[in-house]
Length: 363
Image 1 (spheres, rainbow, N blue to C red):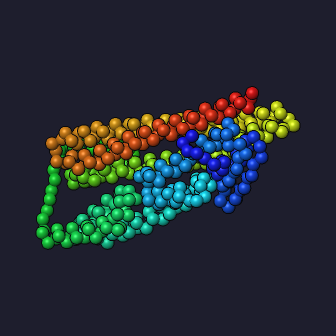
Image 2 (cartoon, one colour):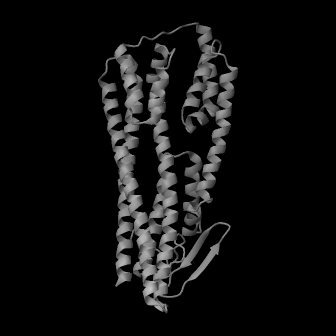
Image 3 (cartoon, rainbow, N blue to C red):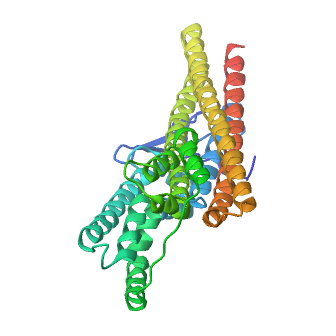
């Protein structure tokens, strides 16, 4: 095991292995603390492995690139003196993770409203940098909008003031091959938000400036949005999976314990087998989902690797702004690929343990 553990596994509801157990349920919070009589029993070891991975998952979220509301909430759960009970509560529907998601939605709303107001009240003829910065923030990530509200607005105002004083203009020309590349991205890029950004750059009535802006920030913004959407999606799914796993293991362990004193041994044995089979089925489903995520992340990492290479090799000035964000996205997706593989391995281990438990009950 990754670490020495005491006999309390708060993640698992009803871990009963080899004897009696004290179970306390708090309906308002929907989590349970369990003291296992025999923490070395095979069924308890399955529960311990699940609890260990749940804590590791929360730690990964705390260290991830997710929005600050989620990362801070995860750290608070990890630092709680209540140990695994805090982790279990955080993972439970309506618990800490969901509360952080709600706060995130509230912060999103406030920042987006401010950006929209700036777009409506700052004409491009007078405040082009402010207007453009607000539009970029609206098209960008939650972090982009928060940064615009805190510092970007004031900085863009200063830029507009300086530009008005200098009274300079800048025009850019776009090669047809660059426009063709954007068109290809709009149709075939693996990232939905990149495709949307490319389609916007080529919309009816668009100009070379729109394509320049796509290379300048639209492409990078779309890529960042795709990463953000992936992180939130897999985070939501895995939090739910860990909660379901805890319930399934609890039911299976309780069914196995009931077999010890059952009047109808055959019926009790069948119930315990079904419970462990359900646990295995859930783990197999999760493993398959993560293998699919691993392949999707691999394709994205390869895609951004190729883009970064093209940007470095291009002599066209329009590509200069693409290199750094392309390399960053390649790193993001490579890390996502690795993490997906690790998650798939955990769920395979859970499936194997559950099948072993099913066979043990069958005798």
